[in-house]
Length: 603
Image (cartoon, rainbow, N blue to C red; front, side, top):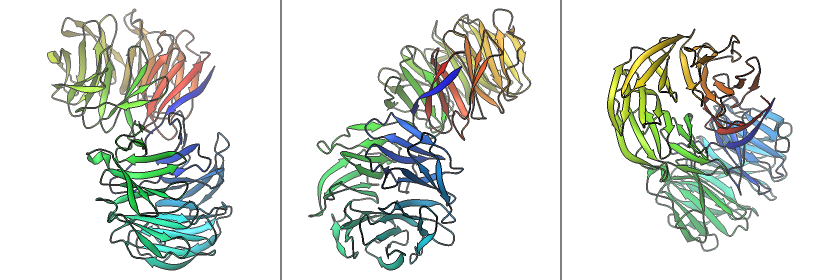
């Protein structure tokens, strides 16, 4: 019995309005870095479907940067902790851990010889610190600025300099080592969001909330001039230099990115990224031939220098916890829905993603089911909506449910949708309600068998309620008792078995053909916390369960005492939903916003 992680369809960067985001570039040119929650995401820049997730921080990570050698990554978190870990080993062994400031770290920069590091942020007693990356020994003080520091950079050539950009509207210049305050530059009239040296160190650029970008001499910090006048109509969140130092890329809250000629300080081209608030540009990175920007939505845009009208590629997905999961009928696509109401379609073969367009729920989606042509979704806006699978957009068909839906399934034979809300169980057909029965328990999920039996789990009364669907009417057939709130249930593909899981850590298998008696005496109770989701393999021979304990367990139906545990399947994050792509491939989603594909063999 074995398992391996086949793919990770990684989370997007976690963004926040009015806050710059920092992307980390790889000196070897292969990957780029960003953060979401407790995770650092390492993504292949050529093929962003290839990704890795580092999850060793105990609180939210704000920034991660490669060392100039490319062998180490330093990541800084909300508590002021910096972890330095290696990039060579798959386990990403920890080299050092330091606590240079007593508050959120906002930016990190390495010296070009890999030996020194500067971190800045919102410390209680200081806003930044310079130290040796091997020992943590102090090699200077970051002082002279009166408010939190958003950005810092090390000059990549001798004599070493450090520049910092602060919320007191100033740029701090430091000389060393040991690094001492030299001066502040006061050209900006609002928060300074980003400071970055050119690759040769001959200049540095600063960007601010005032929409301005300034160029300075890299050695003595004299003002060379302003880029554009001003560079943008909105705040500038990021600047990135071209590898040859001749051009500058800027990202702004005015929903554009702009390319500038450094010598003339004139605009070369403009990338208009959209017209909604989500199209604000909060970060940029120039790595080799790739120009990247990040939208407030979290989307990663690959900009096209030859055609500024549209990006070469947009990496889409989620940056909020994923609550629902469904597969297309031919199992070529995975659909995921998140806490913020967004739905993404993923192509299984290459991991490409597309956000479902149109008017959706606008907030958490609680259930999702697919037929050949339609994806049904229900959310806590108390509605049932439909997505056209071919066009990947909401159709505009909306059924008001009158109460919050907790579960839903489709009886494919005649396209009836059964939705369980906190007040009633509704049967709908062709977008209209055709019958309903009151619900005196709080439901949590719905599953419909091929023979028309409907199982609805009760989170309020610890029961699985079995109904028969005759025409448009639901009739109660049987109730199955559990020892805790029942969280999920699903019928096997052949309709012969039903599996249900509960908050009492148990997974119970029932024989649907024998009056729903337990299918075996073996107790499936190896989870350490509430079980959130269960799923049958297509051949009905395996059951997967995912829980609050971050683990997935694969159970054998034919040999009940045989099981396989995937420990920490989504580290530091509960598993919310599971589905089988085929008899050997399992899909899992969790609160870490990642979608993972697992190969499972020998059970």
